Amino acid sequence: MSDTPRIHLGSLLRASEDAHAEGELTELTYEQGGATQTLTFTEPAWYEVDINSLSNDEMYLQGQFSPTLVMECARCLRDVAVPLDLTLGTLMRYEPSADAPYLEEAESGEDVLVFGDPDLDLSAYLAETTVLAAPLSVLHAPDCKGLCQVCGHDLNEGPCEHMAQVPVEEIDDHLGVPEGSAHAKQNPFAALKDLDFPEE
Image (cartoon, rainbow, N blue to C red; front, top):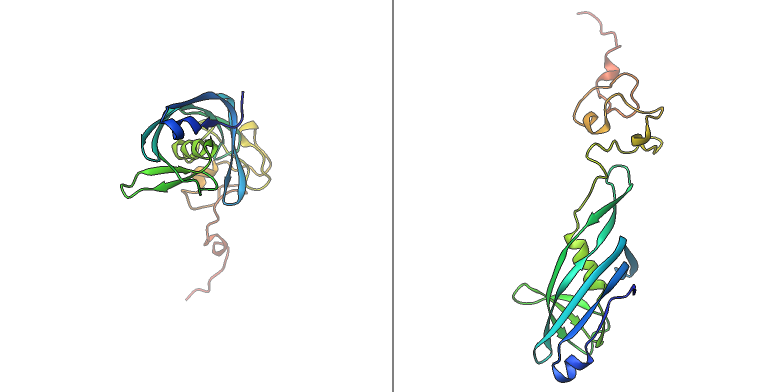
Protein backbone atom coordinates (compact mmCIF):
# COMPACT_ATOMS: atom_id res chain seq x y z
CA MET A 1 0.00 0.00 0.00
CA SER A 2 1.30 3.46 -0.90
CA ASP A 3 0.38 6.81 0.62
CA THR A 4 1.50 8.61 -2.54
CA PRO A 5 -0.54 7.93 -5.70
CA ARG A 6 1.88 8.03 -8.63
CA ILE A 7 1.64 7.17 -12.31
CA HIS A 8 4.67 6.90 -14.61
CA LEU A 9 4.17 8.61 -17.97
CA GLY A 10 7.61 8.18 -19.58
CA SER A 11 6.40 5.55 -22.08
CA LEU A 12 3.30 7.58 -22.89
CA LEU A 13 5.35 10.68 -23.65
CA ARG A 14 7.87 8.76 -25.76
CA ALA A 15 5.62 6.38 -27.67
CA SER A 16 2.01 7.44 -26.94
CA GLU A 17 1.44 4.27 -24.94
CA ASP A 18 -1.42 4.33 -22.45
CA ALA A 19 -0.55 4.42 -18.75
CA HIS A 20 -2.33 2.77 -15.83
CA ALA A 21 -2.02 2.98 -12.04
CA GLU A 22 -4.04 1.64 -9.14
CA GLY A 23 -3.68 1.20 -5.42
CA GLU A 24 -5.01 2.06 -1.98
CA LEU A 25 -4.51 5.19 0.12
CA THR A 26 -4.95 5.68 3.85
CA GLU A 27 -4.59 9.46 3.53
CA LEU A 28 -3.71 12.19 1.06
CA THR A 29 -1.04 14.78 1.85
CA TYR A 30 -0.75 17.81 -0.40
CA GLU A 31 0.39 21.44 -0.42
CA GLN A 32 -2.09 24.32 -0.34
CA GLY A 33 -1.25 27.95 0.25
CA GLY A 34 2.28 27.07 1.32
CA ALA A 35 1.05 24.72 4.04
CA THR A 36 0.81 20.93 4.15
CA GLN A 37 -2.76 19.63 4.29
CA THR A 38 -3.94 16.08 4.99
CA LEU A 39 -7.16 14.29 4.12
CA THR A 40 -7.73 11.22 6.31
CA PHE A 41 -9.80 8.17 5.36
CA THR A 42 -11.52 5.68 7.68
CA GLU A 43 -10.21 2.74 5.65
CA PRO A 44 -7.89 2.21 2.69
CA ALA A 45 -9.36 4.07 -0.31
CA TRP A 46 -9.11 2.39 -3.72
CA TYR A 47 -8.10 4.38 -6.78
CA GLU A 48 -7.67 3.39 -10.41
CA VAL A 49 -6.38 5.73 -13.12
CA ASP A 50 -5.87 5.38 -16.88
CA ILE A 51 -4.20 8.07 -19.00
CA ASN A 52 -4.52 8.02 -22.78
CA SER A 53 -2.55 10.07 -25.30
CA LEU A 54 -4.53 12.55 -27.40
CA SER A 55 -2.15 14.64 -29.51
CA ASN A 56 1.19 16.42 -29.06
CA ASP A 57 1.61 16.95 -25.32
CA GLU A 58 -2.05 16.52 -24.41
CA MET A 59 -3.69 13.48 -22.85
CA TYR A 60 -6.81 12.47 -20.94
CA LEU A 61 -7.08 11.05 -17.44
CA GLN A 62 -10.01 8.90 -16.38
CA GLY A 63 -10.64 6.57 -13.48
CA GLN A 64 -12.35 5.94 -10.14
CA PHE A 65 -11.60 6.94 -6.56
CA SER A 66 -13.65 5.70 -3.59
CA PRO A 67 -12.53 7.30 -0.32
CA THR A 68 -14.45 7.36 2.95
CA LEU A 69 -13.41 10.79 4.17
CA VAL A 70 -13.13 11.72 7.85
CA MET A 71 -14.90 15.05 8.50
CA GLU A 72 -15.88 16.86 11.71
CA CYS A 73 -19.49 17.12 12.86
CA ALA A 74 -20.45 20.78 12.42
CA ARG A 75 -21.99 20.91 15.92
CA CYS A 76 -19.98 18.66 18.24
CA LEU A 77 -16.73 18.13 16.24
CA ARG A 78 -16.93 14.32 16.40
CA ASP A 79 -15.42 12.41 13.49
CA VAL A 80 -17.94 11.57 10.77
CA ALA A 81 -17.32 9.02 8.00
CA VAL A 82 -18.36 10.43 4.60
CA PRO A 83 -18.25 7.82 1.79
CA LEU A 84 -17.60 9.18 -1.70
CA ASP A 85 -17.60 7.41 -5.06
CA LEU A 86 -15.76 9.67 -7.51
CA THR A 87 -15.55 9.35 -11.26
CA LEU A 88 -12.31 10.96 -12.44
CA GLY A 89 -11.93 12.72 -15.75
CA THR A 90 -9.74 15.62 -16.85
CA LEU A 91 -7.60 16.83 -19.71
CA MET A 92 -3.85 16.91 -19.11
CA ARG A 93 -0.94 18.82 -20.65
CA TYR A 94 2.77 18.14 -20.35
CA GLU A 95 4.89 21.26 -19.74
CA PRO A 96 8.51 20.44 -18.72
CA SER A 97 8.82 23.85 -17.02
CA ALA A 98 6.05 23.07 -14.49
CA ASP A 99 7.65 22.56 -11.08
CA ALA A 100 4.57 20.89 -9.57
CA PRO A 101 1.24 19.66 -10.99
CA TYR A 102 -1.55 22.24 -11.00
CA LEU A 103 -5.03 22.71 -12.44
CA GLU A 104 -5.50 25.42 -15.05
CA GLU A 105 -8.75 26.59 -16.59
CA ALA A 106 -8.78 26.26 -20.39
CA GLU A 107 -10.57 28.65 -22.74
CA SER A 108 -13.42 26.13 -22.90
CA GLY A 109 -13.88 26.51 -19.13
CA GLU A 110 -12.65 22.98 -18.55
CA ASP A 111 -9.89 22.27 -16.02
CA VAL A 112 -6.57 21.00 -17.38
CA LEU A 113 -4.04 19.19 -15.19
CA VAL A 114 -0.62 20.63 -16.10
CA PHE A 115 2.49 18.67 -15.07
CA GLY A 116 6.22 18.71 -15.74
CA ASP A 117 7.52 15.51 -14.13
CA PRO A 118 6.72 12.26 -16.03
CA ASP A 119 6.66 10.55 -12.63
CA LEU A 120 3.36 12.23 -11.82
CA ASP A 121 2.20 12.58 -8.21
CA LEU A 122 -1.62 12.61 -8.26
CA SER A 123 -2.01 13.64 -4.61
CA ALA A 124 -3.05 17.26 -5.22
CA TYR A 125 -5.43 16.30 -8.04
CA LEU A 126 -7.16 13.57 -6.03
CA ALA A 127 -7.32 15.81 -2.95
CA GLU A 128 -8.92 18.70 -4.84
CA THR A 129 -11.40 16.34 -6.51
CA THR A 130 -12.29 14.89 -3.10
CA VAL A 131 -12.72 18.28 -1.40
CA LEU A 132 -14.94 19.59 -4.21
CA ALA A 133 -17.16 16.49 -4.02
CA ALA A 134 -17.46 16.45 -0.22
CA PRO A 135 -20.36 18.23 1.54
CA LEU A 136 -19.57 21.61 3.08
CA SER A 137 -20.67 20.38 6.51
CA VAL A 138 -21.96 17.19 8.11
CA LEU A 139 -23.66 16.08 11.35
CA HIS A 140 -22.78 12.86 13.13
CA ALA A 141 -26.53 12.51 13.86
CA PRO A 142 -29.56 14.59 12.78
CA ASP A 143 -30.39 15.39 16.43
CA CYS A 144 -26.83 16.32 17.47
CA LYS A 145 -27.05 18.70 20.44
CA GLY A 146 -23.64 20.28 19.84
CA LEU A 147 -21.24 21.69 22.42
CA CYS A 148 -21.89 23.97 25.37
CA GLN A 149 -20.92 27.44 24.22
CA VAL A 150 -19.61 28.24 27.70
CA CYS A 151 -17.52 25.22 28.73
CA GLY A 152 -17.31 23.15 25.53
CA HIS A 153 -18.99 20.08 27.06
CA ASP A 154 -20.48 17.64 24.51
CA LEU A 155 -24.21 17.95 25.19
CA ASN A 156 -24.84 14.60 23.49
CA GLU A 157 -23.24 12.99 26.54
CA GLY A 158 -25.60 14.75 28.95
CA PRO A 159 -26.34 18.22 30.32
CA CYS A 160 -23.83 20.53 31.91
CA GLU A 161 -24.31 23.28 34.48
CA HIS A 162 -24.72 25.86 31.71
CA MET A 163 -27.24 23.90 29.68
CA ALA A 164 -30.35 25.83 28.64
CA GLN A 165 -33.84 24.37 28.76
CA VAL A 166 -34.16 25.28 25.08
CA PRO A 167 -31.67 23.85 22.52
CA VAL A 168 -29.20 26.41 21.19
CA GLU A 169 -30.56 26.03 17.64
CA GLU A 170 -34.06 26.97 18.87
CA ILE A 171 -32.87 29.77 21.11
CA ASP A 172 -31.45 31.55 18.10
CA ASP A 173 -34.97 31.71 16.64
CA HIS A 174 -36.63 33.21 19.72
CA LEU A 175 -36.28 36.42 21.67
CA GLY A 176 -36.42 36.14 25.38
CA VAL A 177 -34.48 34.54 28.18
CA PRO A 178 -35.59 31.06 29.29
CA GLU A 179 -35.41 30.60 33.06
CA GLY A 180 -31.97 29.51 34.26
CA SER A 181 -30.43 29.63 30.80
CA ALA A 182 -26.83 30.65 30.22
CA HIS A 183 -27.05 29.97 26.49
CA ALA A 184 -30.12 32.03 25.71
CA LYS A 185 -30.12 35.00 23.42
CA GLN A 186 -30.51 38.03 25.62
CA ASN A 187 -33.55 40.23 25.20
CA PRO A 188 -32.20 43.79 24.92
CA PHE A 189 -35.27 45.14 26.76
CA ALA A 190 -35.15 42.67 29.66
CA ALA A 191 -33.33 45.16 31.92
CA LEU A 192 -36.17 47.69 31.56
CA LYS A 193 -38.85 45.50 33.13
CA ASP A 194 -37.86 46.41 36.73
CA LEU A 195 -37.56 50.17 36.17
CA ASP A 196 -40.07 52.47 37.81
CA PHE A 197 -41.30 55.19 35.51
CA PRO A 198 -42.90 58.33 37.03
CA GLU A 199 -46.60 58.64 36.49
CA GLU A 200 -47.67 61.58 34.37
